[in-house]
Length: 344
Image 1 (tube, rainbow, N blue to C red):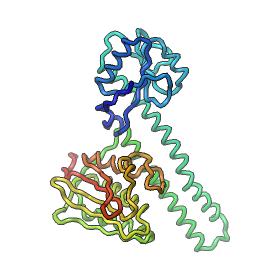
Image 2: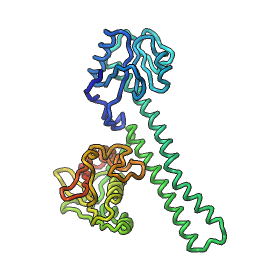
Image 3: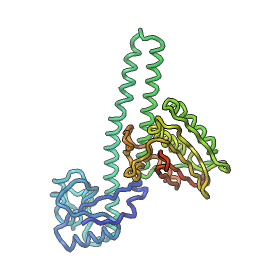
Image 4: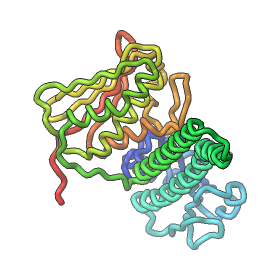
């Protein structure tokens, strides 16, 4: 049986803004006890699955003396054992007496956090080992070439430039991974201070002009009248805009321009980044801000850019949306409250 209700804590910062329901496997040989535990989980919004297969679950709840047997079949998933005493193979234990829905949900949340942290650690190691191989190899090749004293000055300069770009790429990768990790474990924070939005948009646009020129795309920007300053984390807002423009440049090659604009909507500032590329397939619109999304038929990078933008927007109590323009191209809209400075 699968509960359709979404946990109230499934989208909370404590679980890193997850949009996917945690999956809990319930193992019990007593039908009445099984129904009671299902009711507890249902009341607190936890998805419980009764199945004879193992794998793909975030946590396993074992009611009775079967924890050791379950552990033999699943060596990795956290196991919560419910019984009169602790059971070998269990990750945590709850006594049968005094068991309540709230106590069960509280203990499950702890185990889900542990499982989440372990997956993040494994993902981090996998991504770093794979993604850093490229820039590190480029640096190694350049260093080998520079070790040759016969290399001409202009060639030496090109190798030096290649190493600098590779180091910058590795640095951006590590920064993105660290930011994404903080977002997912709920420790990501922003510090609001007043700054001129016009100056920031001008800076971000200028930072991408060279890449836009190489792609044959004109980057234009405009700020509506009446927007003087905003209280937000300037560095993080710039990071979000960098990611949005970088994403647009991936798909704007051969189109006319990318438009960066800012306007107001009540007490909120709305910043839009629009490209005139192929747009986003309708079936992908709901997933563009998911981690590892690499859609629009041209996968590149590790798919963290737009997920980070969403994390930055939510940390500001703002929002980010993606739509397709009627006349073609994708439109990303970042909405932020004008806000007030954080106390020192």
